[in-house]
Length: 441
View 1: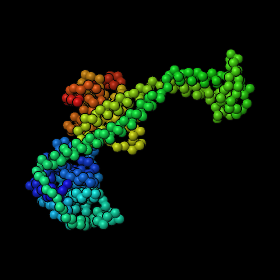
View 2: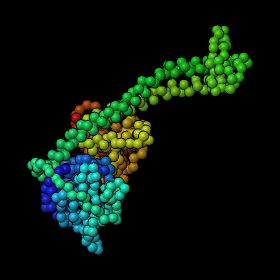
View 3: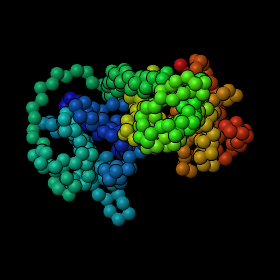
View 4: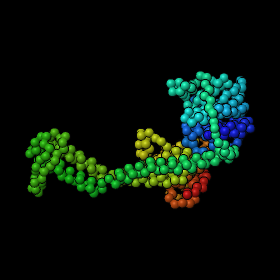
């Protein structure tokens, strides 16, 4: 963000009297609401720090680091005394007075839009660091940012900027729209490429599955070989790897014995064991095939949901970054979990997942289902808190997206889990419900 734009924004914000709400809504994004006005978002991302405004910002989690605790303690409900932007740097200082039971104190929130070293620093009235979004050690920079130490000023800079019309707040809304469109297209392409790799892996695995007939034939062959070994125990020397014997119809046949077998009897037992495993695999092969097919359907539907994401933040909720261990766990579960505003939203991938969600849900959790149509079950973990409308509508959207393939408007019923009676498996009856309307694009 340019320096002259920060100065104009500081003048605009100086007309407000109070910071009503302040909180971090993304790793490097701070939301502020002044005098119950529309929220301002201060994005301190490296290389593209800016301020924007938007009607709806979907966040995945609620932050509770020491920085977030002090941010709320010192600035929420605080009186806004002064907003300044020095002429020689791209930074903004918000001076706030906060009153406690005993006394009034003054604190400064310094927002630095300095390119590579963007930061948000909480200072007391003496300029001593109380907390910071990024802690910087003296071994990394000449200007350390450490709790309990005075903050050194940034070196002054000269700005030769071409001024263009900058009308507030429209300019901040336009800034969000233009950046979102560019970032969103790139982010969707990246997320879809990740999903394509996952889908290709599942499809390859499915294609390589042998048929029940092939496995049964292999098992029958091993049983036959094991029987021949037992019939010729007296003719086979210990530690033999190959042996020529006569089949039951006196036809000569060469048998390859298991390499780890020490005796003919052990070789026969190992062949019988291998045959038994193949028969067991053949009998349960349909389960593995159905499981893979259900996973493919689920991830294909998620692939389609990505196309309709309205923001990069929504994409992050739909397909967050995971460690390798969490990725494996996510793929093996029969339901999928999404996080929004700190609430956990669970979507059943199949009938087993739906039944499991019903079993694991607590009585105060919110249950959702598409009205009078086949549908996945969705559970919002509430922890006895009321669910915000934004979270509820997003969960209803997921319920429709993962249940229906046709475009149109659908009704989604929702109620507390305690109002849902399981009839059998994932079949239910429910009472005292409310209904949302969701349009699938």
